[in-house]
Length: 435
Image: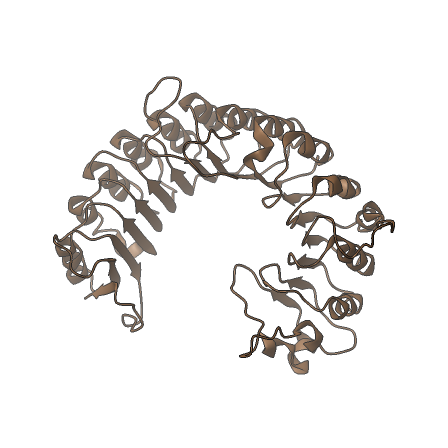
């Protein structure tokens, strides 16, 4: 990390995006290094600076100077150590921003007791080109009104770190008529989703993440929220929806109201949960998705599902490239339907399902065309995996077992992927590479 600041690189650097990474900015003596100051003096060509995953404070004065001398900067996403008064100063230095990650969004020690806080709304009003907002770490909802001046132009809003309720969300959403992408926590409840459906007619992507994943705690979003979204947001192309109850009727409604869906990921928290109104499996709901959404390429299934659901996927999911399965199916036949019926399947992830050796062998004709197969807590044996390895020598098969001396031949995890190189030589002891 420290090396990025050398002057020859810094002068030419246009994009520095540290995303989904573990970034260490300390030396051997665990002293935090001032990497921001390593950018050379003078005007930069920096267009994007993203460091929200850096888990340590930054030299704010150096950051402010860097932003001030970067006239081409359009994207700035800050980590949680940047306070809201500091954000205010940065925004006034860079009113040309189009994408902003706010860092922390709560009260700060930077403002002395008795001092008047900055007019945060004026900073958002000055950024007239702002179309994408994210961040909101450690949010204090009282500060949310500050973003109102920017809402009318927003096409993307990420509140996935903001634990806000429906009453706090609604005044924001009611101004976001151009919104195309929205990420939220389920703390907004079905009432919050109703506000989204009523306002965001151009919405194309929605992700609803859970605040609490405990099975025994009733979730705040349900089939009511999903169905109202399908009725109000007919242009929806991608949805990730965590909930603890869902009905076939709501999923079928979504398949009819949003036929342009490309991604449908429904994660029903808890094992083998049926339709709560009919107590039937969720087969018909997911069957309707793959039948009516003819552009579908990514699917995640959950809830109580029989082999019939996988039969539907094999029949209608001809464009599906990525499939995720958990706690589903009755027998090997379910996976056979998928492997024999989905010619474009590239990525397949299965866990805690009753698929075994026969199901695995049914994909021999297709595995060379896939990028990877992950199966954990299924009914696979080491012998069958070894047979696959011998039959398909250009595939890498890794068997992962936490126990060294197991009494039976069943394995915990199979990870199979294409590899043009030799098997890796850095596998830990729990990994056996089959050849």
